[in-house]
Figure 1 (cartoon, rainbow, N blue to C red):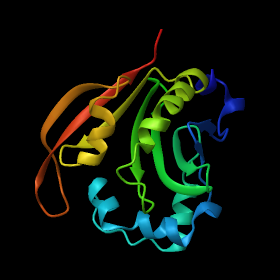
Figure 2: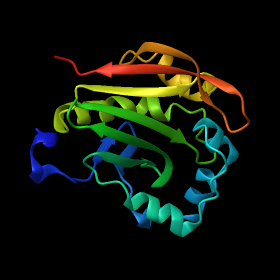
Figure 3: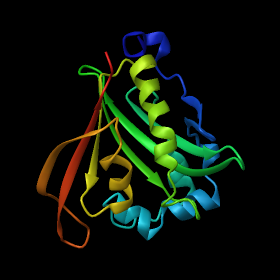
Figure 4: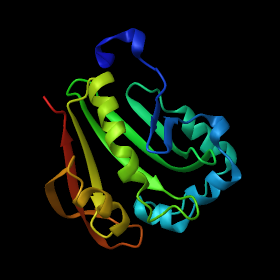
Length: 186
């Protein structure tokens, strides 16, 4: 399988599903629109980050850090207009075959739409089949209602834990984290 075969290390992600294309991001994908919504207050709050104020070069350099073996930065593109509307990052523990997923949808007109519902199944199937993962987990801020909507009633994920006051928000507030997990079907 992929994680055990060094010849497959670094293979880019390319998945078409439900009107969307999921593919590994490159520095060439950094556009003014992507930069704008990535730096938006809504995105930073959803990720529990202070304002990062990426420059074009910083965001391009950030995309280079992902090796498509232990970590992935995957763009979600609307196939109707080839617009980058969101992303997934996945950090993989190869020894335990577990991935930790983060997601964001930020292009104007797309937050609140079922983008993640339309793409998550194909993403999970790909990582279970071709990247030899056994489990995927997502840590969601309890106050991130948009992201909770994507996981609470998703049949592929179960609420595994609630970590009370687990992290500190940029404004100093203590925030609960909900952990949702998905297991590979046997």
